[in-house]
Image (tube, helix red, strand yellow):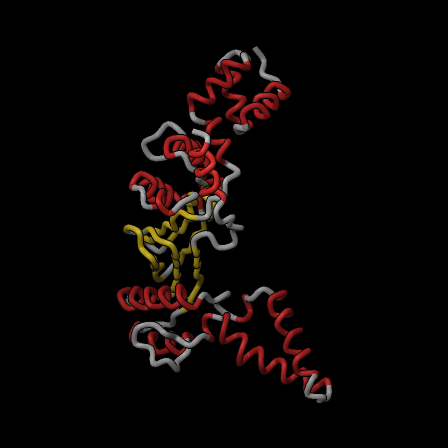
Length: 312
């Protein structure tokens, strides 16, 4: 029997399952709608879909770094309790191990075969939703790599090896001593975890971000009553001395091991070059903080549980 688009839509409306899952269900049941509903329920896909609108802002950041390439992944769950579940942690660890292959492409990562399973990463996550009973999602991924040098990783609020609440990758491009680079990379990663810079250099900052700060400084400077050309110089000076020192990695004061509280990251790199025996460039860094940017609806899940208990 031919499965039509209208049949797939009808099943999707009835169950909330994904389009491809609905098509598969109808194909497997020769177009019988009720049997298709049961097929989805047995696979846990209909149940998973009902949970998909619940906010998943907890979970874990997973990191891996090897042979000049590092990858980072955020996998979300609804509660920290599930994030501490060994089964969930194993899933995140397995997804992270695949992340270098995806090269920062989330769709590609979700489509990769899950290790030891006859389904994709996306399919396995859906199965886990049905098994554990919470909404889960692979939210984002990114990679960092160098031709010469090292990529180091650091996990803050560590839950297990390579898993935590804040994750940082640092890619150092250099032909210098690898041991020196590895130590420096880890120190920089710890600094980045704490200082949360927006970019490596001022040139890499979002122009809109700079313009927003420039507008604020300009309005404040106008109160001085000085001429426009003087105000412009005052604003550019504040951008360099205040704003860039706050958000640009190379301009930030380095607070890592061995730092004196005065030297900038740029100066620390220059000093390290003497030990490494070659120039060192921060090619890239990636910092993920769990749940950042997600609109968390506090109490929603707790209220849902309370309501369910009350109905018993």
